[in-house]
Amino acid sequence: MKSIRLATLVLAFAAFACSTLEISTDYAPGTDFSRYGTFSIREGAPPKNRIAAERIAGALTTALEAKWLKRLPEGGDLSAYVHFQTGKETQINTTGYGYGGWGGWRWGGYGGRQTTTVTQIPTGTLVVDLVDEARDVAVWRGVAKDQISTSATPEERTRKMNDVFAQLFAGFPPK
Image (cartoon, rainbow, N blue to C red; front, side):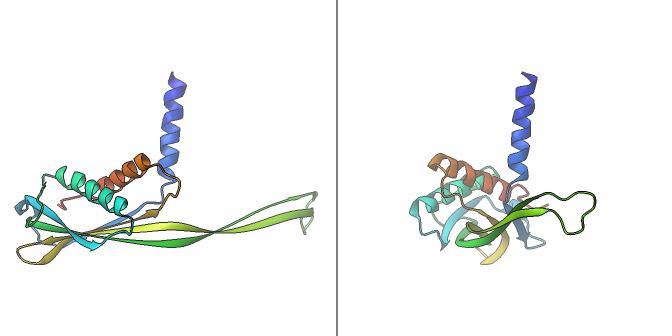
């Protein structure tokens, strides 16, 4: 039983260590976030996939409601503008092997082979702007960038989106 727990812990750590998620946040200093009690979602630059857009709106709602804010269809204290952009990153991997060589030969061994592969990895960048509706002033911005899985199930995509928003809003409201 102990070895199963250890294996689970190691796998969880490995999954976390391999994460490519990049998070950054910014806010307007001096903003009193305790003044806000409601929010509404406004359209920014949504993903082309309507299902993904609805998944994003659901994850944003879950994250902000966990932080005391209530979603309104329109006219919240804060307007949340969500922007989504896709891109690609180039990944270059070189692997090789050789054999032979001993006794301190300077030029390596005999033979060998080297292979280089170039892969285009799809990425997504999600930007959330929170704007004080009454003053029309941006008060908070969060940016999340990660690789997009092309083989994930709908359930995995939903879990991933909820996790991204939980991490994005982990330090919200700023102290």
